[in-house]
Structure formats: structure tokens, C-alpha cells
Amino acid sequence: MPERLFSDDPGDAPKKVKGAFFSDYTGEFPMPRVLQAPPEATERTGEETEGAKLPRKAGGPAPAWLRTGRPALHELMRNRRQALMALGGGAVALGALGTGAAAVFGPVGSDPDEFVKTGNGGGNVSPRDAGSFSNRDSSYTSGQGDLNDLGASGVADTPSAAAVAAMRATPRFPTPLQRDPVLHLLRRATFGPTPADIALVKQIGIDAWIDQQLDPDKIADPVADAALKAVPTATMSTADIRATVKDGDNKPQYELTRAVLARQMWSSRQLFEVMVDFWNNHLNITSPFDGGWDVRGPYDVGTIRKNALGKFSDMLIASARDPAMMRYLDNTSSDKRNVNENYGRELLELHTVGIDGGYNEKDVRNSAYLMTGRTATRDGTFKYDQNKHWTGAVKVLGFQHANKSAKDGLAVGDAYLLYLATHPSTARYVARKLCVRFVCDTPPQGLVDRLAKTYQESGSAIVPVLKVLFRSLEFWIAGGLKTRRPLENFVATARVVGTTPGADTAKALDDMYNFTNKLGQPPLGWGPPDGYPDVATAWSSAAGMLETWNAHRAFMMQQWKGLNNPKADSLVTQPAATLGTYLDVLCNRLIFQPMQPAEKDALIKFMGAKADTRITDNNLGGKLPLLAPLILDSVYHALR
Image 1 (cartoon, helix red, strand yellow):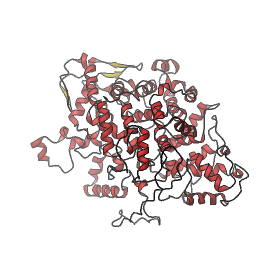
Image 2 (cartoon, one colour):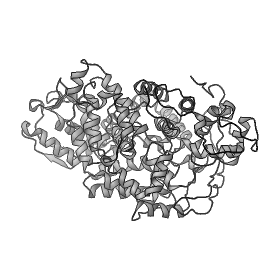
Image 3 (spheres, helix red, strand yellow):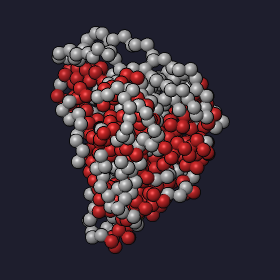
């Protein structure tokens, strides 16, 4: 077990560096002049958070690129605290009830008489009008607003043309990452670049690589296929699972989470796996969950993976006929005599139109009515039970139906789901989430609108939307404006150091999964139905950063027994005469660019040597396994 560095000495953490450093570009795209660091922002003055004033670091405020997509948290917390103090304990209790309660009780401060005169209270109030955040990520980035000017906008004929145009523009938020379109594409469309990925994109070109990734069935995937043999129940049907393990055994759910790790690390179909992860969070069902032993794996196979690059309408309808979803969101306990609103609400709030889609509590109730009768049998299959279906006229947003016959309830529900999947609010909601995943935490509204328009024109097909995304200049100008979540950082580390399946892959995947629990982001492990957040502020945690750094040491010190773990001294294969040259080669291998001089000097000081110290041992006298993780600890590896 490697030593856990920095556990008691935060002062050794890598220093933040202002500005950006870009080495001479040698790729296929022309580079602009060297970009200068943005001028120092003036230090904020005025009232501080209540209590003692916090000491300020001499370095001043964080650089603009680091603030991109993040709210002024001290302002939000101060304002929230003042509001709760003014309103008293009742406000705290109401604040915990969620969007449904807020819609029922109406906006804070509304005139009760107005409810009587106009009917604008109770079930007629939408979550949007009640003051709810438009989506979960907005709860972390509120106050920042949409970054409508990243430095370039518009759409080109091809992704490579968009990349060229963006490379000629000056980013409004330059970051420490080198402006290389190949690296940017691989940071966003994979779970982390590898030397082989970079070589392939440079060989066939950006356009061909994207087209290839958007047709994953034609990509051979031997490494991931071999690794999946260690977790055989992850790809089984419900019938096969029930024939293989005893009733209630959660082994299939556990193996599914290990299969996620294996595919993200080793699949050649990287963009497909990115989209599988996206949809598994959008239509989230945690794994394991009570009742999922025989159905959660088949949900991943038959609903998410089958439709990840297809039409969202098909995926949504499939999810509404999936026993895992019926169990997870309690639709199995909903019938005409006792309607459970859970699934009907999440259909609107999380799966389709979003909180600001305009629906109200009456719409939620009718949504739940439409879904009655959809259930799961004890043997793990979906069933429509017409005896449980509520009949009577229903209206949700613009969808209306007489709903007179219980035997037609399944078809009526499917029509409702198709309406929701193709609704303009759903188009905007899905488009914005894609922009948050691929561009930045608070994406330009123009880009969101462009993708939403394509979504509607294509009938909710996802590939056309992704093609427009990759032809958009906003995508290519946004280098470094996303932060890797803990699991992504972990997987990116495995990919860049070259860890591969070995003699006991099953045991190693178990160990890795247990480590991701300490990171706070085990695969498919988010309990609520809204999926893991995908904005930097949600993952701002000293403990999480510490465990991420420890993961880097685990990989460098070959902790994962049962896998093929390259030794640290295999990272530098080019001859290096001096320590300074050696560090440049090592940085190019792990983070694909050199560090700034101040950071490089810090690493040389860590080694207790000088830049011109002669190198006679590629393992640096045993210090390389300690040096390499420091490079992975840096911001260059933390950004995607």
C-alpha cells in the first residue's frame, strides 16, 4: 500500500498558477500568438460573511478560468443565511420539503387573497413560479449566469473547420491547458486521452475519428470485452440472472458497477461510453438498489446502452416499460385506488421538460394517473395491468386525452411519453445538459438553442445533436473549462498510465470500486433519481481532492493487484540527459504538455537537485513513483 501523501500537510499541495502557458504548437491546426494571462481582478471589498473576516492569500482572487461556471458561494451562503434568520425556523422546515411543496404552498410572500380570487395558488403554481432552480446543476451555479461569450461562437461545416476557427480566436477564459484541438476533443469525448488515442486522431483526422466514434458497432472492442468476462452477470438478461444467482442476491448489481469501470477504462468505444454515462445519470437508477437484483443490469443493457446514440423518445418509452424503473420510482405501488406520484413527477422534473418546463401540481397528478397500470412482476418482467389503470380525462401541459378505456391505457401512456420526449422544453433541457457535459458549467444560451433546434428537427435523435455540437465553435474554444469529477479523474489516470486487465481482473475491479467509494463517486452510486451533478462546485471538497491524489499514488505504486500495471520507469522511454529535460518528457507523457517554469522549478526542488543534474537512472533512484503522482496532482490533469 503506498503512502498517503498530504494527509496532514496541506502546505505541500501544488500551487495555483495564474495565466496560461502555451508551448509552440506542432499539430495540424494553426496556432494563434501566445495568449497573455488576463489582468488581475481587483480584490473584492465590502461586507464579509458574518463572523470573523477570512484571511486572504497574497495571491489574490482565483483566475477567471477557474471561476468560470462557479457561483460566488460566499454571496449565496450569506444571503441564504440572512433569509433563514429573518424568516425563522419555519423557513428551514419549508426549505427541506422540495419543489413539490413549494409549488403547493405557492411563492413566499404571495397574498393569500390572490389565491382565492385568481386560483394562482396550490396545484396551479408551477415549480418555476414557486422559485425553484431550473435544474439541479443550476443550484450550484446560480449567480454566474450564462457565459454567452467564450471568445468564439457559431457553427462550421465540419468539426475540424470549427476547431481551426476556434484556434484562431482568443478565448475569453484562457486556462493553463495547452490549446491543442486533438487533446481537447479527447478530454471531452473520452474518459481521458492516451498516447494511442492521440496518435489515432492525428492519423485519421478529427472528422473521421468523430464519425467513427458515432458508429460504435463498427469499432472492435477486444480489451473491454475480455475484461467483462470477469463480471459475467453484468450483461445477462433477467431470465439468465434468475437462473444463475439466488433470489435477492445483489451480485449482478455489484458486477454492473465494476463493468462500468472496466468499460470506461478500456473500451475503444469511448464516446459511446461517455453517452452511456450521460444517460445513466439523466435516467438515473442507483446500483445497487432494493429490488434491483434481477433488473438493474438488464436496464443498463436494454434501455440505456441500446438507445444511447438513438432517439431519446425511444429511450424514454423503453424506460417507462422497464421493471427496474417501475421498482425504483415506486410505480409498482401505484394504482387507480392509491396513486403514487413519484414516477409521474420525475418524468416531468428530471426525465423530460425540467422544473422550468411550466407544469404544475395538477400536471404531476395527471402524469401519475397516466402511468398507473405499469408495473413489474415478481419474476422481474414488465407488465401492464389494466385493472390498476386510472381512467378519466387527463391534461398535462399541452397533452390531453379522454383516457376512457383501461385496456388502452398503455398506448395512451406511450403517446404521452412521446409528447414529452419531443416537447420544446425537453429539447432545451437535454440540450443544456449536453452543453454542460461537453462545453462548460454555464454554457452559452446560443449554443443551447442551436442544439435544442436540432433535437426537435431530428425527432429527438441524439447523433445529429452531437454532430452540431462538435461543429460548434463554442465547443472548441472551451478548453479547460470543465473539471473532471472524481471518478473521471480516477479513470483518466488508469488510461494515461496504461493500466490494463490482468490475471485477476475481477479482484482488481472490486478494489478499484471500493476506492471510488472513498472518492465519493462510485459508478452508478448516486442515490437520488437526478444523477451525479456535472459542475465543478458540486465536487469542491478537500477530502475528495486528498483521495484523488492518493489514487494517483496507488496507480504509480502498482496497488491494483491482478491488473497489468506498468512500472513508473516505463513512462520515460526517450533518453534524457538532465533532470530538466527528463521532467519535460515526463510531463508530456502524463499531461501532454510541459509545465510552467515555476511549477517545473518546484518539482526540481522536490527532487533535491538542479535542472542540469545529469540523469543516469530512469527511475531517478527510486523517486520516480513519488514524482509522477505530483504531476498528476496538478491542475493540468484535473481539467477536462
